[in-house]
Amino acid sequence: MTSAPKDKELKPWEAYIPQHHWRNATDEAEGAKLGMWLFLSTEVLLFAGFFCAYAFFRLLYPENWHDASRYYLDWEIGAANTAVLLLSSFTIVLAIRAAQQGNRGMMLIHLGITQLCAAFFLIVKLGWEYWPKIRDGKLPGIFFDYPAVYAQRAAEKAMIVAPDAIIPAAQVAGDYASTFTPGAHDHIFLSIYWISTATHGFHVLVGMFVIGWAMWKAYKWHYGPRHYTSLENVGLYWHIVDIIWIFLFPLLYLV
Image 1 (cartoon, rainbow, N blue to C red):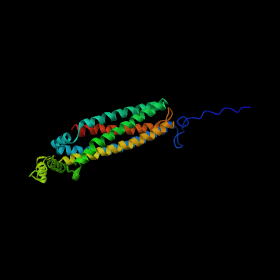
Image 2 (cartoon, rainbow, N blue to C red):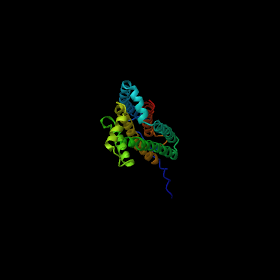
Image 3 (cartoon, helix red, strand yellow):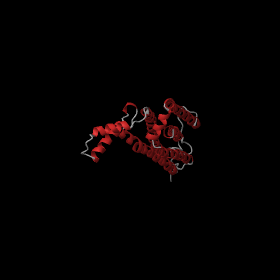
Image 4 (spheres, rainbow, N blue to C red):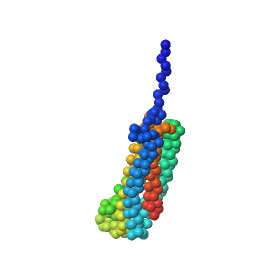
């Protein structure tokens, strides 16, 4: 006599049961979203401080602010990163839609594209913006030493071109420094730039870890038509990161 066949094993999203302190899965999902919105409101308050500082110094030094933005920042780099983040917002929405349809393959593909976009953003920021500025002395506040760096390079170039020149390299450096004079408040502009974009970049890095965690859960079948709340919250976090950059890009690069 053969035994009765065992029931098909349910996937985690099919067998999901809300925690005991929730009446049902709908209440749990709404509570989780409310908690995420409260957290995101604190993130908005954090960046609001940067925006207020920006507005205050922008009103104090309007001409210097405009010139510093044109001189120290490349709007094409900022535009490329903006396009990439907009694409990532679209792909994470597609990932949530794939979870609603129970399509794990497309969910992983769209989350992977979002992850690649985030990595591209950070690579461009670090390799094409931060490192050249650190190397040249375009640093915030008291660390700003851009004219001195250029004077030193002018002296080194003079020694290479004419090593037996009568004019000492130190004098060449001094002459160059006297002709290259950045704005008196450039270091303030760079302070706002560094603190706001670095804080945003840290949020992008955190987002990469969170998206990676969501990819692992998607691979383990934790997301499906009946349960994808945490994936939605990951999407909300990523959207606020993108929206903040949408404000930072024109304020810093297109001012």
